[in-house]
Image (cartoon, rainbow, N blue to C red; front, side):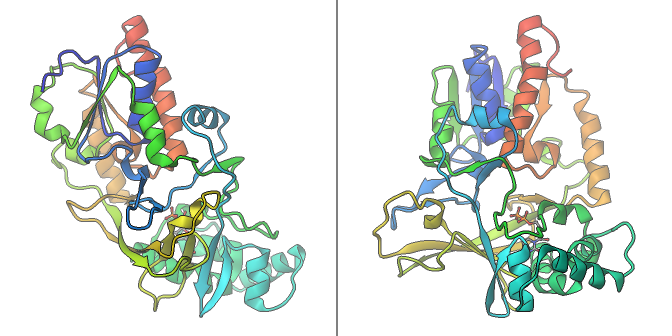
Length: 388
Ligand code: UDP
């Protein structure tokens, strides 16, 4: 393939790459080649219709769009309209169903009695007093400090062990920071200002973003197979794994992956909700996704539904990387790779894989918009080097 005629090469068509490509083509009129080794665009956010059931599925797990950023919300709304969907998650513990994240409803159900917010706080404080935890140094301490030992043991410990295959005392407190605890009956999973599901699905968003004359999509093309055909110095936005870019010369960064076990169930409704978590260790999976519930606005009169059971494990080479493990050793390794990027002023590393950071969709878009403003625009408007 001849890349001479392109102004910009974007490697990876997830939200980071797609946003840069869309902006560069539409705003700056650049000619952009977007490469993706997969045969579809959209990275892990991709969605498609399952032909057997007619239900839209998320092949890499449920993706709900939510953000607090007005800028990101305005941007994404150029490509889709959103439904009024508000994500709510339930969790099964001891054959009973509770609301997640832990809120006053969860606490009342768990202890089998009515609690006011003050009473619930007092209960947690009382359980806490027995623990003598200072500044939390790990996930268990952080969780116990905010919800007490009983709720931690019921809803967090087993789930976290299954998801990370690591004792929660060995995990950073930041992981649980993603999960709010509420002393109200608010049972929404996300607390962001803006939330919804794209009415036409994620596949449609990417199609609208990328389907323009200045963008050429090269699907099923692995950057490493054609790398030597790209002229030296050509600006590249690389959103693949940073360790692979450098041929793993210092070693591999640690990732976790998930296995989704798919099933078409012979019932119109398998579990009555989109995501059901399983908190207990004796159930091997962490959660079950049922995709039809993500779009209650769509008419559905089928007699089958499609579900996926999610299992979590360490990623080996060849597995899809999902969550950076980010031990201190991983962090050091990452910094060593970052030091190498200084020698390549025409390459920008971005996205979850390129920066070894867990990014939600809205964070990937926000980071890409920033990168576009601070790095891509200066290059073409003022002849400044790509890296600033
Ligand atoms: N978590 C848990 N129980 C649950 C849901 C989450 O203990 O029912 C903990 C677990 O440690 C997990 C973390 O909260 O790793 C973050 O959960 P989140 O839902 O953000 O994970 P994601 O949906 O991104 O996989």
